[in-house]
Image (cartoon, rainbow, N blue to C red):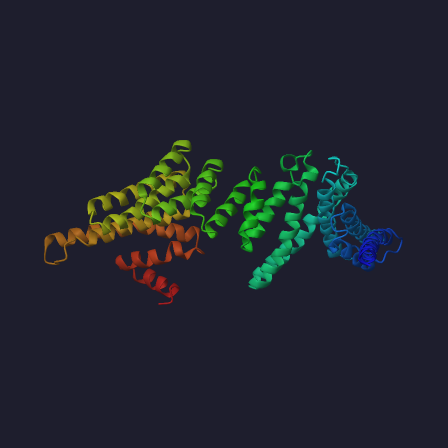
Length: 433
């Protein structure tokens, strides 16, 4: 009786396996028909992809890919015939097809009982993926633009959800071309488009705070001359967001070496040192960079910026003479910048600010007794600092009127101390005072 029961169980299991295999064949047949019922084909193949008896069979995933491939073909036929067609269906089916063919290839590469690999699917499926890869790009761009629209409308939750869809398409492109299926082609090195799509993947992932995805895909874009520096920037942001200070620092330093003309890495490293009162390290980096490019205005500007910041620290430590010397060095640096680039906004603003720093520094020790003959002399000196600041603030206002943070507060202080009534009243009005 037990043997009979066991036989019945085996027969039942075999009938289930046969049914799923039949479903796979039927799904393939339906998809290949002249007027296919894709809904039914997908129901059949989806069941087979989750059933233990067929889910590890490469044929199951091959047919799943074929169903989606046929869906793309049918929608494209409508487009050729100038009939209404579903663009997103084309993109979604192309993406699903690639995913299914990659899974098919993975399973087909498993050696049989004799240790042999008999992958009869690879050649055709590689061609199919390469034929549809542009639809992965187009799908990603479609969602990416919608994400930007949502961001502009300040619908950030919506933008993040849309961004997830964009990321799926961009990463789908990269995943396909760097998979073992295309190992011979080595597309990571030979496909000129892949770094661009990896860049979009990294940028999208960064915008939606998927930092693991940033670190997975942005590296594929690092060698691209146009976007490589941005890809490394995304990676730096990701390490910072993940709290990995060691990798954050290493990536900044690598970025400086790899992309010396891109200011992000050097600027952030200097900010880190400056904010942590490590001015010697920051200045050493600035000097090192200037040995490589002595006329780089950003590097020269950074030295002035560091001297300005050192002033506050030195004053707090009671080192007044050193603080005064730091401001003088800042002025020297900014003037060097303006000799090379006379319209460098931050240098104009900071040069003016440095003169007001000197004014405040001098004011603290100037003669305050109006009956003392030295009072008039000190007031003239004090006024001179503000007069030196004035043309630089006015120049940056003229050149960059929309950047009020560079000149508004400064001109308020200058016009007040120079007793420039009408000019001061205008600035007061702009400040809403």
